[in-house]
Image (tube, rainbow, N blue to C red; front, side):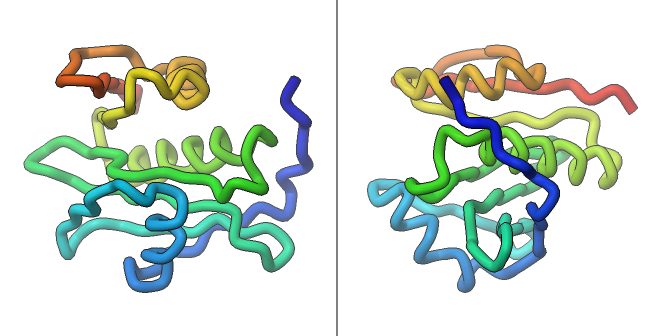
Length: 137
């Protein structure tokens, strides 16, 4: 059972890739990081502790969650859901109509969170599932 946290102290700060690169590599050591200069990076903190990040990007006319992660000691407490909600609201404020993402098919926890917030499977490529959320403006 997931421990319920108090998210009142959770804050998000726009940052640059350089500031969160080590966290991304620590969370996803095998990942290949791709980015464009217009991409947005936000770190999530609570009471001075960095809990995770979200990396948003726009490719052509489609917003994407390129990366999202929670540091190991803060997982399974609801922070991933809160970070994802922040990303969704950020894209909504940027007048985005939809958000897509790609997730490993065996990452059942992440798929559950994405599904709970309205993302639906739209395809598969190898061992990765593509999901999309259509935003109601």
